[in-house]
Image (tube, rainbow, N blue to C red):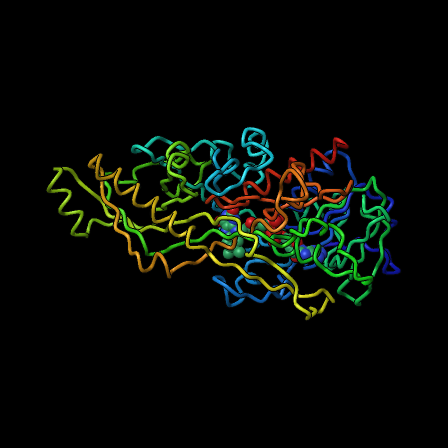
Length: 467
Ligand SMILES: Cc1cc2nc3c(=O)[nH]c(=O)nc-3n(C[C@H](O)[C@H](O)[C@H](O)COP(=O)(O)OP(=O)(O)OC[C@H]3O[C@@H](n4cnc5c(N)ncnc54)[C@H](O)[C@@H]3O)c2cc1C
């Protein structure tokens, strides 16, 4: 992999690029490649390398629910970013996720506006757009809404040749961006300071207002960079809203907490080849969720058996076969300002101040999961289609996550409620944009990467159109 640095260690003249993208995960590579397809010349920075991951860089400390290096383990440094380890589960956000009174959140864009980008995003993740309309009515109030699971797309490996050969994209590997400078009026980014890890060379790049800078450094990396203090003690560039780092969300996962007994052999439901392996799952429909103020929650079947007393009982009672399913429940977290990324006084080896993370799954989040399960139980009993068994103790104690880091540079209408606007442009800045799940104002229950890629495509279109 060529690193496009001149022989004296300097970058080519920054004025020869149309755009700068910081981070080469799914968000950064999608943005860079789409801009290159629109004849823009892009310099892509990646603090990791092309052949090995470097896990040590975000160096977050944790307090709260997700401890023991959770955020480090789920922020991979290297070409392709965290797509080096993701699992390849895909689902789109639901209609209600974009306007969710239960979460107190309204995205400034509607699902219908993102839908054409979802259609373009699916093939980038190696599947067909048919994965976008998987839902089928099931029992009153609930839908069958499976996840598409295929071999995960590793962005570094997939785009390696293209990035090496493309005349339109230059990649600065092993190069961390350390800080952003702005013009006097703080209306545009005017400079980037970066560090080439090989040789520890610091470089200063002058940026013009017409050259967009896209921050695509991940859910912890984006706020980490925007929060870095300025030498003059002033507010860091892009942090004027005071909201950078706040509203961090994960998806609470509950394993071995809920069992289903259903009158259906789910494994007889076959998905098309492009859909991949369907992970069978059930969710409340939009109407039911709105009527009862439910947050996102999906019950995913993991294992099937017929060896269960409830299977025997229901088969006898209803005179038809029943099946037992072990499940994983994936829920939504309410965005809370106290769940946040902030900086410690310690620096990492690049000289960046290390972040610390406080993130607690709230009682309301868990209660909403429990309420959804009770609604599901009622509907199954009323229709004679099955039962739900809930381990309430585990439901409160057994919370894990999915490695989905969302919300830390949230999108909204004004600087008083958000960091970026509907175009993912940092409020007040002409040429500073953010890509990735850090812009999600709410996260629903669905894995984020399909939505990350859709938003990156939309952002690249916005930039290419000069808006
Ligand atoms: C174990 C695991 C399983 C997962 N499974 C799924 C799944 O099944 N489905 C799903 O949808 N999602 C899944 N995810 C989440 C998914 O991996 C992320 O949503 C996705 O990778 C985020 O993409 P991104 O481009 O925003 O950030 P990242 O992929 O994190 O990329 C950010 C990049 O920016 C670079 N960077 C950071 N700071 C700087 C800097 N200052 N200068 C230069 N470069 C910088 C980093 O080195 C990194 O390469 C999973 C995550 C994990 C950890």
